Amino acid sequence: DAALAALRNRTAAPAAARPSATSAAATRPFAYAPIFFPGTANMSQATPIALTAGQVVDNADLQLQRVPTAAVSGVVTLGDGRGASGATMQLAQVAPAGYTVDAPVRLNVLALPDGTFRIPSVGPGDYILTARATPPGVTPSSLSGGPALWSEMPLTVSGEDIGGLTLALDAGP
Image (cartoon, rainbow, N blue to C red; front, side, top):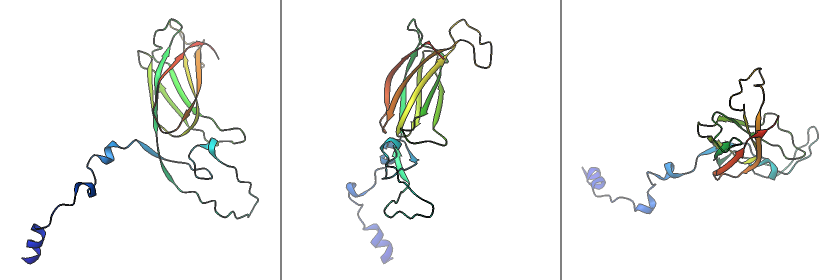
């Protein structure tokens, strides 16, 4: 009975000491990204380490890091300004000069009927955003899809959403 009475008499922790029920929901989306020396998730900010077989390097510890992801969004348009419905959007990771990437990140989405697109969960790094579409009224005649409209732009993603992009399609590869 004494223990039960003690529990009944306890006071709640001050609000500042209690975790918020919405704090987890209010945080940005995240991913566990590859980490490059000296501790960055962005390959273009990495410092190369030259190694020889069997060499041990001190103070080059890399830890798994939780990094914020971003959404990349905008609109892709045809030459007359209308949205390019169904355009293929690809966000491809770009390795900085002197680096190679065995399996670069490639994120793909299709533009909505009004030409808008949104690519969620993009990790930090440098990318090329490419839009491709077949001109209206042209039936694709081969595996490559026939004549193509195309546009691209470089992007650097750092964990903050990037919106309001506009890619205007033109004749291309």
